[in-house]
Image 1 (tube, rainbow, N blue to C red):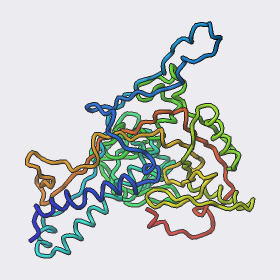
Image 2: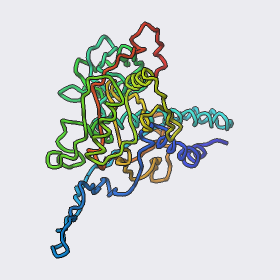
Image 3: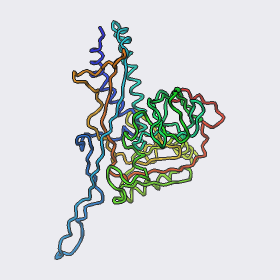
Image 4: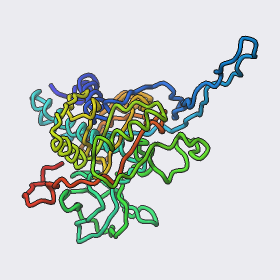
Length: 404
């Protein structure tokens, strides 16, 4: 007979390992390339020594001259607080009782819940990798009824719960739920809330997540930030990565120029290129125009993509339309206190009744922070132009209802 104890046992012993692997490897191609480590985690913080420059104790001279002066490696200490990442499932008491004598129905119930959790967590993990840690999703351009037009919608998805902030602070007492995202017209529709009035220039954030997300590429390439990982950028200019605005169409020369700069000046070996689907299509058109073979690279997690001189060029929905990142993923580490785990109560239970409701919930958690040891070894090219026809703005009729 299926009971809550059976459900807990399945969540702990069957689903946890599978879910952790899917989130660590299959959630996002970039995340799959980044190493995970519990090293340098001290309490609630990551404290890591990052080397820069070279050992200065070298030189040449005659056989009677004094030896070169010693000068050790240069180091700075990165300090960053571990971020709390959560994923929550909910099962009704009625559903558990209805499947009590049907193991197959019970397995389907748990599998559906875990599949939904993995999909939501994978979406948010991928988004965080390219975010700046603030949880910022989009900025409101205009609103008509419950339909909101934004500057971009690539960070939004149906079912997402979001908070709304104005310059004065948070406007909603409870998060609003996105019911539909129109990816052609960059609008979304939300469930009506009598207590909330959304206005132009309001900013959307994931529910309760403002300034609590991991430090993604947006943080690394934030030109307005004066420090990163607790270290001043003005005192240590090597913390500033390579950034260029091209205002030209994509080409091998444009990509190679950034790669060569990093290779010659920072000894960084680029092994991963990420861009928007618009830029990747433009690059495919460029390769086709010059009758070049399009090489295919296979990544961990089963991803396949085109490549530039053996370096995978991956399209990611969370990269801005005119942008390309060139990364040495060996410089990145996702520091974690532990891998994904269920939150347990004092009694060891992970399924807990929601107070006042006939439902049970379980919460998956991971405490982690993303750190780049060598920011100057990474590059971002923005402003890339493209003459490739965008299928979302052409005369083709596109059904966007299932784009999520």
